[in-house]
Every structure is written in structure tokens, then in C-alpha cells.
Image (cartoon, rainbow, N blue to C red; front, side, top):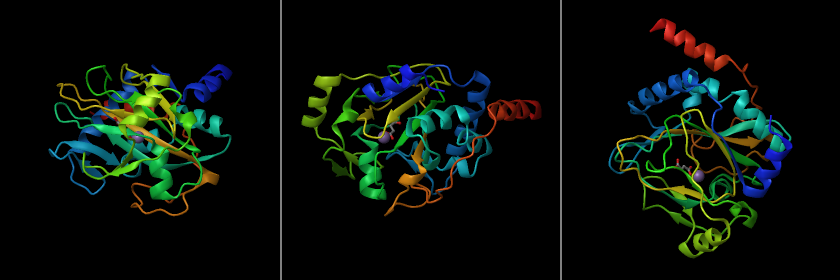
Length: 264
Ligand code: SIN
Ligand code: MN
């Protein structure tokens, strides 16, 4: 559960970071599974222009460990608390930010895409992410502009060229103005850290030219009443199953990790 202080900070700053939410054993099994997932060729896995893995969508639907993560109470409950209603999974992705080849994510607001491409009525969805590798200042950490969510949904251009993934991105003048006000932060830390941020919080990340991969898994949780009205993207990018998520027991992932270790 979030404290009153956490909730106030979330509304003020637009994000919360908790460095130690999942244990090394819980996160190790996820990191291992993620590597195996990226080894496959399937339509849900996008590659950088270089061919390196960029994003694996919808892994919670075909991988047991990520299925448990997608219903994990340590991720579902805090977001439920902020929105005050049950949630469904709007999107689920593992971003690889591969060693040497991980490409940029230009400055953007996620709700800009959810509104324009999916017909989501309000910014009552947000990302809650889990670090699968150590996120360092040098391996392309996610950068956030604190308090930028207070500006609502900003004008954006559809970038279909820079990277392999289409995104509604913000121009330099807008980013400069927001940064003058809020600065930039890049939460870093060990695998198992959790970062949640408002759908209108401006964020992006630089390329990764280090030998250290930076895998982060993002659950995009939407309030059930805020289901998407006019989707244009495939079902495995913007899900159409609006059934409320029923969380698994808190130890479900730890038990799965123990079982996998015993079987190895
Ligand atoms: C995103 O903004 O959706 C992903 C950015 C990142 O993983 O660096
Ligand atoms: Mn984003």
C-alpha cells in the first residue's frame, strides 16, 4: 500500500520510485525468461533497426512468469489505490535496451499515444515498471521530467522515422520549457526496483552503447471504466480484454522461482 505521503508525492511529482520491491530470486527468474523470449521470432517482438531486440509485447499472455507478474499485487494494488477502481492490462511490454544497440525513446507522453491511437478517454492509466537489470546512469535509464504531467496532453508529432517504433513525440521547445521548470531525473538501481509514473509525465531514454543491457518490464494498467473506445493498433499492443485483474498471492512469483530452481 502507498502511504498518504507517497500519494501526495505522486500527484505533485508525477512518479514514484521504490528501489527494493522484488527480491533477487523473483527478478532473476524474470530476467532469465526475458532473454529466452527475445531469442524467438514472433510478431509481438519488435527489433531495432540494427536487428537487436527492442520490445516484446504481451509476454504475460504466453509466459508463465510474466503472467504472474502481470497479476502481482505489489504492482496492481498501488495503481488501484491511485485510481480507486479495478484495473485491466492495456499494454504489457519488456523493453530490452540491448547492450551496445539499444536505441533511443524520444521525449513523449504515453497518454498522447493512448488517446490518439487507442481512443482512451482519460489519463486514468499508467505504467508501473520493474527493473530486470541494474539500471545505471550509463546504460540508457528512463529519464523523467518531474511535474510535467500537470500540463495535460501536449501537442505532439507522429515520429515514424527515428526508431523502429512509431511514437507521438514532443518538440525541442516544449521539452526545454518543461525541463526549465521540473528538471530531469533518471531513477537508477538494482534489479527489482519499481517505478510508476503518470500517463502524462514526459519521459524518454537515450541509446545504450555500454556492454550492460537495461531490461525493464512495463505494465500499463488502465482503470476499467476508462477502457479504450476506438483502438487502431493490434490487440497484442493495445489489449481489448477489459476484465478486472484479480491479483495472485504475494508469494506466487517467489514460489514459481523456487520451483524453477528445483527443476534445473
Ligand atoms: C517507453 O517510454 O515506453 C519506454 C522507454 C524506455 O524503456 O526507455
Ligand atoms: Mn513511454
